[in-house]
Length: 318
Image (cartoon, rainbow, N blue to C red):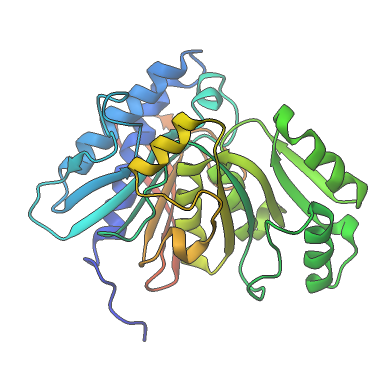
């Protein structure tokens, strides 16, 4: 029998409800061509839902610094204040462009952990590598070449390198990375947006993704690490600083070792709950559907303390 989780047993259900309500609100922004409006729909709904929870919640990864984001900014307190101290990392709408263009894989994402449980990642880039569960620690590493990471993973799986599929964000900065992966025969799946989903795909066999590589937002890295922690996946991240302003921003969040390589349990040091609801249909979750006065949602909820993964389909009146 697993130990009792260090938070209320209802917190996973609460997290699912928050992302469901944000996704339902985001539905109105699908295919409308306005990224900011779609994001605002999700932000408003998520904030309202969080404030209804009996938690002493604090946003540690949110929409930005206080002077940049009117709602769900870093440091904002949410909840009624009556319950346990909970750190919250969120991306109210992961894939604003995907939503605005009615493309696949847009999600509403939330992670919760007891106070002090998640790295307060600055709003910079992060180099990332991720694989799913079932492998020994250190099998893949940010300090290994892309080719060697593919070879190591292929060796552990007992397959040829051309049977390894790697997910990479489709960005000009990844041209050399993509070339290196193809040189060793790996299949490269390029995504236009949404690297939280990309990382989680490594732990979802039905997506066909074996390895995630490349740079993306550091806050999204912590969110994805929370998800992988729940299922025993492996993740490493290293912050990337392009200028002194970004280093100063990192220092404000408590980061002092700029070259440090973080493993999953340093990014998320305590037990975590992760929830994601599909906005548009994707590889992992179906999107929001409206039909006959009802709205249907598809949600993934994971709890690291019990190592449980739930997929919840909910239909409710509009």
